[in-house]
Length: 418
Image (cartoon, rainbow, N blue to C red):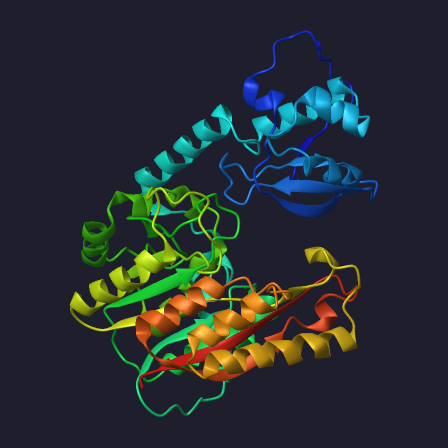
């Protein structure tokens, strides 16, 4: 998986000129993945969520260096970091160079890699398949796996019109049954003209709404964008809506829904958006990006003007608890009970349909269980005007994490016409 290791014999001349973006290094978001070498020694691969290089390779460092990377925030010089941490300047230059070459440092190399990555998207006319291959790369096998999970799900016996669903965005191994419970709500819907997928921007730089005019590759073919809806949105909000579209390159919360959409509706046009939380202010109120409050009425009005039927999919996980997310205590039975108790309490407020009370409770409690998709859950409720109905609640299985490192909870909800 990862093949680019730190070179202990690196020869650096400290008198050489260091580019400004390396002199004050600012590391991009990355995913730390534990790996082992042939001697079973543990390292950490620094995976670029967007895979800007396009080769899947990641720099690999000893785990004890991870705390050092948290200092690379663009505020301190290499010399200041060296004096603070005791790390030799020559070693820091080496580490920073490796990060920069991998595109994990903000600066001209990262900018170049972003341009090249988006050039590949333009050439293909769609973003890479990515997480849409979660069920498998072979279209027949992938479709069979999803349909098997759907067929095993119970009929929710919903009364009334389904306007949308809330489904997980975690891996199928931990959330497959909950995905199936959500998409089973669409079983009797029939033909639709488009699906709006509202995702979460986990690792991208955009702090506003992120959309694109490109489609999404998948094992089943390209899911084309609904250009007419995008035209209406652009007429209301301008091209700034697509300003940070590179964030969609590695974002799984959109692509992970595609196999399920395909299983129920086939190659239906999609409208995809990464939705920021209404509780998190934008970094700069300069109009350069689209805010949550601007987006909701624009999307609602555009969909009302679009012909045919639209369904909404909110791609949302709930709590993220455990050492993997910064907690000190491993997950045990008591913590699982506490997480579920709070999850169900917060869900109950959401199910009442009172979004103001729901957001107030999240704010009051400091979102201490790290619900990561407040934005798209709120957006799905506001755009559909539907009343949420809980179909299933689940937590990631204990047997898949015997060390109690992480617990992720999720829910399947239907948004019903009032």
